[in-house]
Length: 525
Image (cartoon, one colour):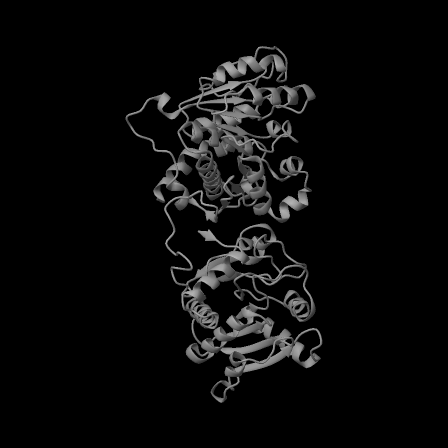
């Protein structure tokens, strides 16, 4: 599903206007679509409280209120911010034929106690509450009337089954980043007027949006293409990606094949402290469909649960950590591989970091490479201008170290941070989180459609790195391998949760679910 930023939405509206559709017409079409969707969800003759700000979102809300009363018999309490100027849409709701079903209150920071008390009562008793206070252009802290009104919303006693509806984006949420101001509106459903906005799916905005509906408000094809291309193109846009989109980019699995057809993956990892991490990456690669999986690990970094299918390539030294003396051996093995995974469990010793940097300089440039965990930590300060077929898979703390940002800054704007890093580094970035965000050097972004507490377990990232390595070995590009890998990995967690709940999953359990997850994704095509 295509997502658009606030700036992109303004460009779409300008293009629509140039094509003959005035913004006032779009406003009426948006309000009508909102009303029709609410009536479809909740039926006729319902009660609603509609909160109206001074901007276009308030106009959408007024048009929707008018249609809900006149066409569907809804009873309305309309709270209009004192800062909103009189207009025709507000006048239309004061017509004699609606007088018995519409009560309009001027509310806000300086409103009288009677008006605010009436809104408090309506918020608690209405079947539906509609937020039309702020639109996608609003950023920063709440102020004035909006702050006062949203404080009443936060204090309201919510009843079971009550619907709290945001128009386009919950008021107080940044439409691009998902950052939420203190006191932002908490919706059970967001009705997106036109293409959905990234802030509905990342950061705090994802929690505040509830379920997101995308409404057709009549934008012409010249302004907005409603027919999405198959797959996940690397075209500089932002998309929310689930199984249906990922199905089209998974590598083919022809029956007339042999193990070499599906590629050889080398995992470089492990140390005395973390011997199991490369084993988990190997499981991710095996269950991800690689034909042959080899692990290069320090000689004394052993693990009793090592997968028997794995080909072992012990390093030259006989220590417990990766050393510069091991580099030539790893490079020699790597020349026979179709993809490499470097980093799981390597450890953080200074000599290991030096060895990782030496290895990266010695590897053949064309070999697709997944860099994870301690492999990333070793490359802090060296990432700019890589311009290589790499996929890097940091979580927020690792991304903070790589970029010099704070963890809070990474979490506030995962799309922007991942996009800028991919551009600067020239590699595909998988910023792991809830949801995971994938960005390409060409500024394309894929926002994962799944968040799942089952993934919050040690080793799940190692499994993901191995899975992406397997997809690269099967012929996927770094962009498609990363997006498809993130999706299949998340679907595997969904399968675990379906059977066991969100607690207690081991990383090995997730790896074992990968074939089922891939099959399920394939069926979504």
